[in-house]
Length: 376
Ligand SMILES: Nc1ncnc2c1ncn2[C@@H]1O[C@H](COP(=O)(O)OP(=O)(O)O)[C@@H](O)[C@H]1O
Ligand SMILES: [Mg+2]
Image (tube, rainbow, N blue to C red; front, side, top):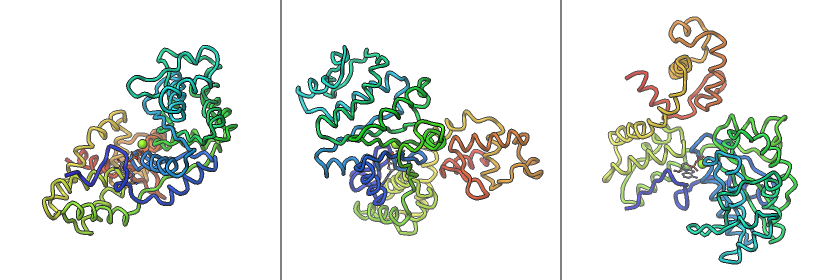
């Protein structure tokens, strides 16, 4: 039987819930030529949302093409330009032989000869030996507009995990070029989304940076509990199993409605349930959820210093006045400067966030895991 819960791939079809307002807003902005910057912590549902919006737009408008670039796997400037051009050409090219010739016309100099058709994917792409020169870079950034205008299309360029590009040494140059070329385009909308909130904010909300006010910044929210509860209960019913509303609510409580964890925990419970989900099954599934994600958490804290870990311990104990005398005696968090710096670093890394006066963990399961590390 196919599991009614899924994680690791994008949420699609009956697995995709809610996000009605986000979908409508995103569609409207992108169709009006307003660029969108979509931000949330990892695994809340950005990629799924953009994919859903893209599918809807392409189904509703015959002249819309959407191309996707995943910046997560891009680590050099050349890779970026090659990927950008390849994706744009592939999404706009006519099928079969014609597409290749058609796309070559949009490039000048010796570059058209380097445009090829990938034997495996059949995509129009670049020979990997292509090293874009200065003039090629601008030409590549201009490609979507040229193609869209010539073919009567609206092209939507989606760049996932956009903040990763900022790690490329030449990023300041790329950023300036992107902004100056893209802002003059009329047939192209950009949807730039990413998980590192601090880095995304630096790129898009800093008045001294090229991408300041480039478009509409959207802070994606979590899916509300009642949508999840309905989804969980129905998914069990549909597959001949049962879960009470109360237990479904507990899934949402413990995961704080974090999309990935709701799906993953629901899956573990569903998988262990023959007929009716119980508290015992819930407890075992929760431990499994923590254990399954442990390597990622381990990885996250590996780079932290002892004083930063001490701060996490304090946050975990509900403490937020880090500099008080009693706190200093209990946790070795260092002097006032260290405390101030660590507070910033842990927030920049999206590990903790300020909520009014207090601090909370961004990732609820990370906190549970940490709790078990501190109190074995
Ligand atoms: N709208 C949704 N409905 C149901 N589940 C979702 C939804 N959006 C995300 N998810 C769940 O969360 C997981 C992570 O989503 P993803 O789109 O990859 O997040 P992000 O791109 O923000 O890291 C998905 O694999 C899916 O299990
Ligand atoms: Mg994603």
